[in-house]
Image (tube, rainbow, N blue to C red; front, side):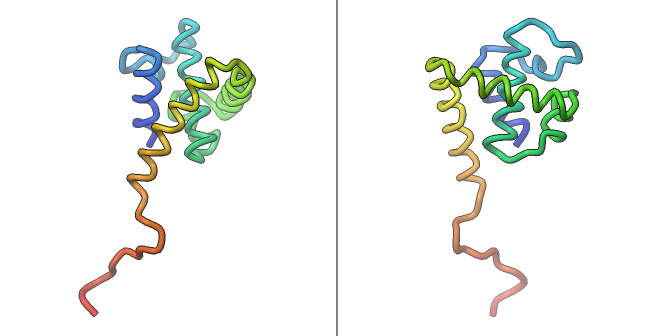
Length: 111
């Protein structure tokens, strides 16, 4: 899941592959993209702040700051629209990967 969200965010921001995992903060665009990725993982997918931070070589407090920052940015309509598009892509991917409601996986042989 982390890799999928990372790839979606990288494409949305037009950044190369390893940008979000760079050990230093970097320029504003990669830092903002990393914040968005952590936000999406936590808010949309339900990954803990600790795991979000760890996925990008950061700690829990950095992931928490990222989520608060992105929430504040959502007040701008152009950013909110972009985030809604990313959330929709993630929701579609999650829906495809989850088994249908009410369908139980088969265990063992025939009954």
